[in-house]
Length: 108
Image (cartoon, rainbow, N blue to C red; front, top):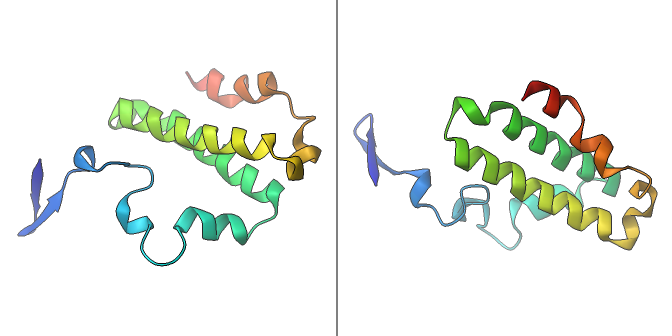
């Protein structure tokens, strides 16, 4: 699906292979998300991922619902991957139930 915007053709996000991490985020030698992670402590990056999970769940009903939930899932999977790494041992005390019952569940 191609959309017109002010005389320019733009590709709908639905046609992107990965709307969370589209091809233009992968230009160059390193992906944007990897550069962001490299610039942060493991705890800061975990917070970044958690914040994005909250953001996308918070507003999924206002936009493309499935896409918003898939974006939240992508960041949640990335957060889980980081928590499973040995370098994240300090975050192992964080309980998944506590995260799941945060303000997200109150909003829903």
